[in-house]
Image (cartoon, rainbow, N blue to C red):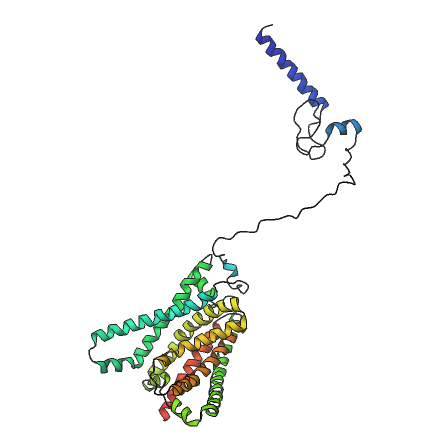
Length: 375
């Protein structure tokens, strides 16, 4: 028989086998429904391992194997690998206002960044003053310039560093680090507020500005009484007789410059300081230390920043220096605690807080201007 004849015979046999498979064997598994290979006398399904031969012979499914009573099955706990996060978990645009459960930045960053921002602001202000001094040989003219009301107003714009530094830093926590999203993360936003809600925040801010005046007056009287009891009246009078920064500023103001300065306090000073100290510092400290300590430490550092000039004043008596410092520190600390609590109460939104701070400063300067004019 030739090779050609053998191939033709094999082809005929294979066709007969295929026809027998299609006519006698199943094409699909009755259990899982998967297609069965065209193999003669296939015993098991290649996918679910069902005994097809048993089903064909007995016209029923094969019985399940019952485990022996002497064999005890042990269930092992299932361990699933936890998600591994590399770097900082980014905050989506929808969750920027829902960060109370997020830890965000740590304690050292919450403290160090405001200190760095203050140093940078001081460096820029000192550099600007040094540049003016370089072109001014007359020290008396330089001194007059420093107490010029418009120079004081212009120097207030250096506090914009308090906005710039935290805004740059928080961008790494956002999926979309736009300028608006950075401000929202710091709490300076009206997102989620309708017009009535914004009006409500403004009214709350104005009300707490008035309350702040009362808090400062009461705390000033209280600490003065306590110090008089401890140190005597004479030392309190000597300490109270020192000239303060507010008196120096007020002495150089007129009506026009007072109005400009009040506007700058509301728009620049109140906004920048609250973004840095409440929107950044307190937000970070609260998440790491809790609400109470976060508010207290933020208020403490905020007060110290405003009184750092005391440490550059040469005093004849250390006791007079301590008393003078306490007379200024306690009122600052009291209103700082109030503003910190207000920020917590308003769900870490800065609308009411910024208005309280700015309007309080404007009222303080205005009252001091009126009192100074009467004296």
